[in-house]
Image (cartoon, rainbow, N blue to C red):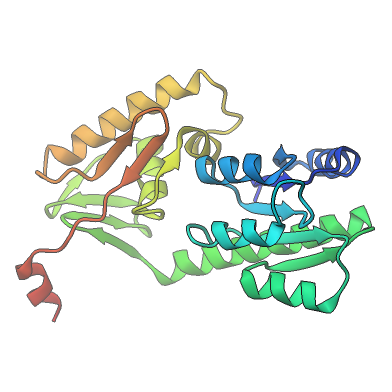
Length: 242
């Protein structure tokens, strides 16, 4: 996962800098949060592929971070904590952590666990793609194998970036994706100026879809990002699938 983005939640600056530097050296993008309030703000406004979490934060217990994050995200969490008691590990894992590393830790072991977790994410996404050929939402249909898109049973022709944007929104239907997340996933080496390009492509994509359908599939969240709306099936569509 070349564009994997990781959030490092750690209050000790020396450890935070060590982890951040190690991640950057190995090609991972990362943000840092020195406390729980900053972490929750980042987690609620940004999308991450992995979270590295210290439990002993100055303003809140890391377990509370796990509990709150799990109410709206399944992103993997690796706990990095000085708490070595088995009970602490069990609680963290039961609340939704995916792995647990005890301080002091070996940086190479941490990187190995990061690689292992990201490989698992890649495998899971690959299996989903293999198992699901079609995405259907209302009158919108995406054939992932042939990379074709239909609205009201008519094929619409999309530019490669429009198709990538549509697939990203479809695979996260009902979820608001931030501008930065979309840019990181669709654009390689994205820069701030790409935000205007993103708006242009989304506008074009929306027009092509809505020209064939009265449904509003793509919702704009001003200043935040975009979301694909889950269209409720009609009674006729429900009967056709029964």
